[in-house]
Length: 587
Ligand code: PEP
Ligand code: MG
Image: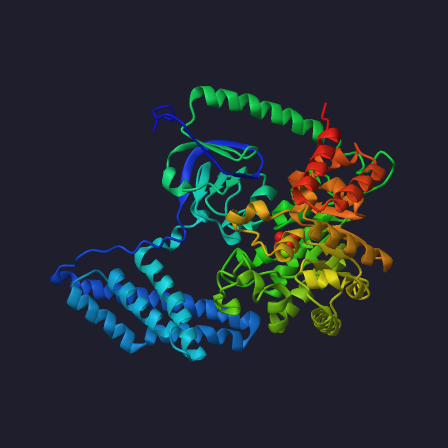
């Protein structure tokens, strides 16, 4: 279609990843499983039933393959869940009801299967008995898989993306973005999402311009439309006019010049005007991002989110594969450090291939997430711990636990780490005996007992994305609440200060690895509060370094003292913003 044929339409969203993209749209409708509905002639009914039987065979094979993988990696007990899935497909009552429905309604198999499955799901979901209720989850999982196979929609994935396209979706999961071909997705637009949802963090790491919170995007924008994504202002322009394209061409030129000026200081130390050194590190989600770590001159990796290795494919990565990945990153970043965080699945990062490991939860961010899940699956956890330990023989590795809420979890995790060490000694495999082990501080309970945890940790890393969400009870991915998600809320600032003070009293360093660290507006405030290290998506590094080199630590400390006295988050924000405007002069 000629992009100029229609008049342009501008929609306001929320800027989530900076940059400008212009291209054709790939409308990604992952959650909408279309169930086709049509009449089937009586003479085609046998073929329709055969199609159903064929789909059952394929689905069984898929489930058996996943079950074998889970059994190998996690053990017999965890694999049992898939027996329940197989049983659904062997349930004669269910199957004959579907065939009966097909014969009586003369409708296609997808519709009949969906009708019967929904009746079963609703019936089971209402039963009081917990065991029977869980059967509803099994039926739902199997039904989805079987319908995908019947309709051939299993391939509707971002992995199929070809050419350079702007991806438009209702929402994206981290596994969606983890699977995306970085050179094919040139822009991202979603109806849901926020600056700290994981899919957006990945887009930011990859430098893909993204705008979220775009109301009705999937209805207003069609596949094949030409759109311009303005990730600076959070704007989407559908079918932009020639004049708009020319204007954006100039804006892009100016931004490029601005960014090249920032990059000009990349090789200079991250040091304030009064000589205070700050450690600036990168957050990465895959080994492919080590190139960015070097490109943006990060002093190592402050957060490697290992869960993305688990989200990329339905099969859980075995110890050796994990080890190879961790080792590749460690060697690429050496001699700088790599802080490897243990598995943080759950929340907005469900495991695609092993739904049974976490299960259906009504409140996943408060649920069976991260260290909680790992401690209940020690075989899986120890496999990862051994892989990380083995990688530590090849460079500078530090290990970090996510979502620690108290000392018991920390002790249990450390006990499993000790077992993992013993197992490696027995195998004769090398690892760094002096590996430093730290904890993320992202749950208010951990922040409140930071003095106690500090005795058992070599370092802290404050995860402001979750810490803010839990302190303020604001779902970090809920766009309707985005205006209440305020890093300058006094509760957030006092908590950060308390954690920093507790850590320094025990002589351990504190990093911030949430998105707050990579926003130059907040970086001086964090330094002023005493934070030792900032870790961020690689493309955020130049601006933060530039600003650090333009300020004095003493000024940042004064700013922090002023801001922490301010009880109104908006006024506190105005102070940090004014500081930023005053010092961020890029000539
Ligand atoms: C955080 O919570 O701030 C953090 C860095 O971890 P994640 O975003 O992966 O939850
Ligand atoms: Mg977190």
